[in-house]
Every structure is written in C-alpha cells, then in structure tokens.
Image (cartoon, rainbow, N blue to C red; front, side, top):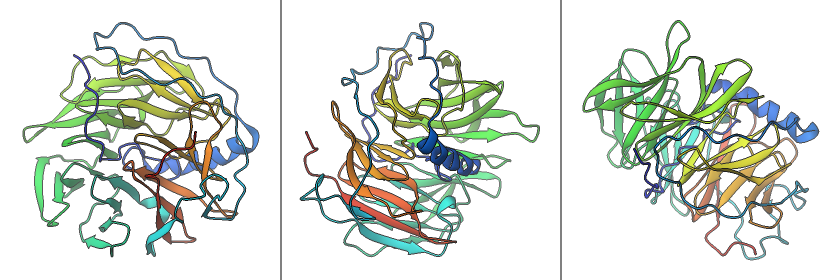
Length: 373
C-alpha cells in the first residue's frame, strides 16, 4: 500500500521534543533533554548508518535535497533575541502567553490559522497580534490536534473538542488512558502501554478502537503521515528501529536495527525527520523507509520542527538548517534557558520556553521572509 505525501501542513505531530511532554513523546522524555545537554558538551559515539529495509511494496518516497555539510557553531548575539548578523530584517520574538505551569507538561500544535498550547486543564489559541483564547477542557497529558479539533482521553473514552466552539464529543470507548496521541489531518492514532508493560499502537475505525500494531518491546516515539503511523521501537534494550504501519492495521515495515540511544521524537512532513543523539545528526527518512540521509552532523537538535524549512533548538538557541551551509542562527538563548517544544506553520515559528519553576512562556517569530542563501 502506498503512502501519499502529506498535503495538510497544519498539525504539528512531531513535535514531541526531547525536552518535555508533547504529542509524540511520553513524559519520561524529560530525561532525554538532560542527555541532549550532555551530548552538546561531550558528543556521543556515532552508530552505523542504516541499511535499507526489505522491499515493502511502498511507492518510492519523495525526492530529497542534497545533504547538508554543516558543523556546530556558537550562536553569539544577545540572549533571547534574533541575531542581527544572520537576520537583519527579521522582527523580534513576540511573547504570546505566560502561564504559572510547568513548561515540561505542555505541548504545541499548529494549523494554518493559529498555534495551540495544550496543557492538562486547558487549550490556548495563540495568534500573533491577538489576545489568547482559552478553551477550558481537561485534556490531561499527551493530547494532539486534528484539522478541526483536539484529541484526548477522558472518562474511559477518546474524545474530541472543537477548536472553534470548545464543545466535546465522544469518538470511541477506550478503557485505559493512552500514553499519547498522534494525528495527521483528521486521522488519529495513539501509543498505549498495558498494565503488564506491553506497548501497542491504536486507532479508530468508525467508532470502534482497534490495535494497529503490538510491539515486542517498547515504543518511544510516534508520528502520523496521512493514514500511516511511524514509530520508534526498541524490540530489545540494546537496539532500536523505526517502523511504519497503516493506522487500520496490517504488516509493519521496519528499518534495520541500530544500537545506542533511541530517538525520542519523530516529525512527519512529506518525509520523516528525527534527531539521532548517538551521532548528533539530524536525519531525513523517506516514507517507504528505504532512503535515509544525514542533513546535518555534529549538531544538537532537540526539539525539531519542520514545514518548508527545518528548525532546530538546543542550549545555544534556535536555528534554521540551510542546505550547503552552516545552520543559520535565528534566536540565541540566555544562560540556562530551555526550549521545551518547537512548532511551525511555515510562516511563524512557535516555542515553549522554560520561564522558571512552574512557569512557561510561549513565543513566536516571523519566519516568512526568504531563507538565507
């Protein structure tokens, strides 16, 4: 069965940054944020490049750009401001919202209209130049966004709340709370963990939940592209691989196994993007899992956001990956500052910043201008 290229750009499904809870990563990923900081200082040993998986019957994935050949450089500039040398005409970041809640227990989703901050007890619609709008809904943790609504679990069921009205309805009965949801357009799936520690991927057919895939090990991250679910699986403790399966269920397709620390997030936008901390590499994987390339090496990228361009955050700041050049610095961070989630609609870049104990700040930057050569 072929995987179609995604035509809906709005939902941020990757995002499950390594710094916090997101639509693609469980709460335990906070530990990965600490590991990413360690990797920035010391580096990690590289792993073998992946071998092509067995023929899956998928259609060949979209063409990819030439690999980047950049190396990690210092950000410089003034803390939490755009760097004048790299972005002379770019506006300064805007503060959209500040809340007295942990930055590590919130996530971002975007569509063509606005960004949405998802917290345990409310969702906030954020548009630069407009006052935030709050939807009071008990989302819990691991919620995601579809084209028209917010998907979450509550009181024994998968539920959807309208982005416009805030009204909720039941999608399907589901006894246990999933670890987290993922989405693409109007399609949804989730990662579940049973009481005996078994991981699986679930989805909905009509109003009935189904198991699309049962893992022999653990599932650390997931994302959706059209009606396919992509996931990072550790079948054993020492190895990991990336898999793909139709949301309705079927035979999964896998990459070869790799050793080392597994990626804690995937981002889907026409292809699959992820940060491999073992070699400090940002990688792009075709939807058929056959072709993979390194976009940048020796560069920490956690979290990661993708639209028409690729954006990375690390302890130094926020960067745009530029083909054939070093990463372009957009914002430099102050000492101790952390970006806990990153999302983009192609015109604006949104991020959650750790504002201190039990405080988060959501900021936005206009990135609609031409990219640096």
